[in-house]
Length: 190
Image (cartoon, rainbow, N blue to C red; front, side, top):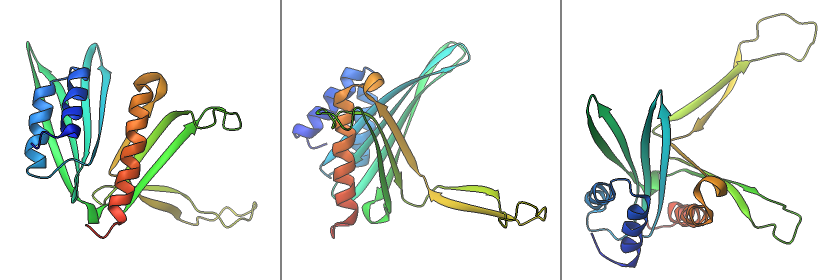
């Protein structure tokens, strides 16, 4: 991997989270190949599975040509722990939606730009979600079956971070990554 400033910052973030930093870094190194890193997001999440704590790391990496979505999961089998890591490489030209939902504290106050929560949703057509509900004709007396109506939404990847759980630095990182990805996905370089 090109050991530029951004790559060193990524390694530092991975080490700070303490979740198999070398494994995650080496996995991303293989996915990035010779491409330079333009922006990244690191998100470490802990979940409970019955009486066990399981950790999960997601890393989004942006290059000039691709979005790389990396996942590393911790598993246990009897007495042995192991981790699995996977990378999905998405051509920037395939990214068709970048949705950023921000929750802002005291929007009318002087500190109206204090973002307390961010949800980043990225779609490239690999996974779609369909929401259906019963159709109606608008007549309150009608009891006929009118079928279903619904919407289909691209929803390949979603990431939620909050000030309380992840801190201001992670929120800033997600906001910057969303800006860079939005710009890259519509530029002529893909």
